[in-house]
Amino acid sequence: MEKRKNYLDFVPVLNAQNSWDEKDGIVTVHMVHKGIHHVIAQKLFHSPRVSHIALDTFGSFVWKKIDGVRTVGDIADEMKAHFGDQAEPVYNRLVHYMKILQNNRFVQFQKKR
Image (tube, rainbow, N blue to C red; front, side):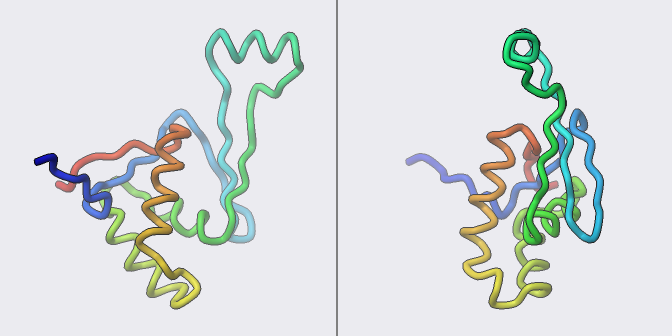
């Protein structure tokens, strides 16, 4: 029987290759496009070398809570306390968001310490 992953026990860590800043509570992630495919796209199609991704209110809150210590479950509890019913369904929503961040290489996961 395969053991299922419990994302609530994972500890997200920000990818150090991306910088970010915050203005008026909204986080903007600056992602530098590296690699041969990106260089070709930049030359041929004039695509940007750096993408600036502005997160929404919930995403910005979560991003600022990712410190390499808190688990996804800890962050979910903080979301519930801060946003109340607006965050519901908080666990499904947060796990889905964390998978998106991982797939786009914004975060990596560690097992709970």
